[in-house]
Length: 99
Image (cartoon, rainbow, N blue to C red; front, side, top):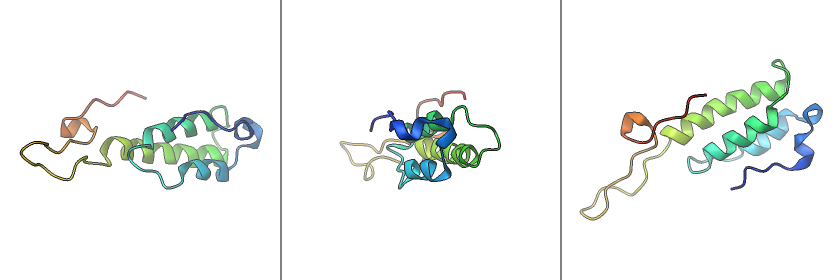
């Protein structure tokens, strides 16, 4: 998934709640962090009280949690392949970046 954005969505004066929701879609743990970054770029520069920014910031928090804690990979332990943990440090995954 690319983190590039459609030019028509980049004009800060025309970003809408629907633009944010179009990126949210059916987000999965696999793409959550890329979607988080795209939404952050989209709402960057909007005033704090802008409805699209408010919706985007809420979604960024949800995607952050989904991306780090939202999946245990693998179908279960077997002798050859153990289950992989989520990215959460609480489950032994990598550390979250500080934002």
